[in-house]
Image 1 (cartoon, rainbow, N blue to C red):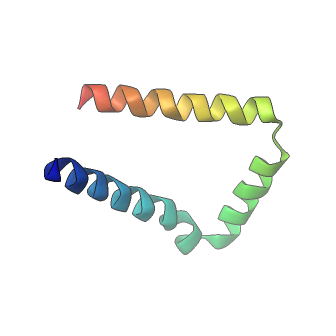
Image 2: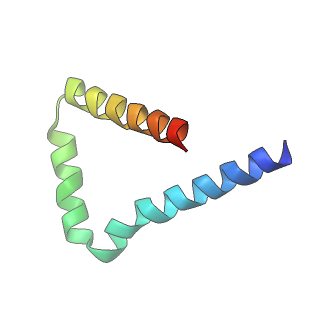
Length: 63
């Protein structure tokens, strides 16, 4: 069980690092990206979320 929490912590840390790269390196582009996301309708956001979940599950399965 301890190894599970360790792996989950590592995955969370990697996610935070990757999520922080764009706003750190290019805040202007990140702001424009967020503005485009805000202009999407709920259906498009749901599909993007479903795609991210599906790709994540597929990647976990392959690894």
